[in-house]
Amino acid sequence: MENDYALFAQAFLDDDQRDVALSDTFDILWLSWNDALASHDTRRFSWNVLRATVMSRTPHRDGRPELGRAAFDTIVLQSLTKPAHRMNQVAESLELFTAMSRLPANQLDVMVLRRLCGFLPETTSALLGTSLATVRSDERHATRFLESVPRPPLPTEGNTP
Image: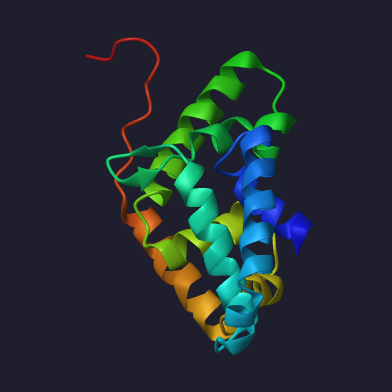
């Protein structure tokens, strides 16, 4: 789980903070393992510990976690070579990640795991300790919300009468 947890944490934290959050997560789990075993699902219990630890270290704006760092570390951005295209992609990613930060916690987790980390629905389900149907539903609702968020118009070249 450590590598998968690290990918999630990396969406919100820099490398050093990520490492501290993971270390703290596993320390908490070690100290509360009897509670985890007594819970309905140890995977869900563990995920909640990870999420709480990561979110406690994540910068927040208006009560929402900031995903701005992730905008500079996308596959699409890395594939672009022209500076103008890279800047446009960063701006688009920042808008998308700002909208993602408005999602409810469960939908945000699914979108980060599915879209930023690239996990399959089955892997996401196993990590979160939720059913595959819940993952698919959360992703569908989150996608609809993100598609409904108005985007600012793209700048056009020149002046048109």
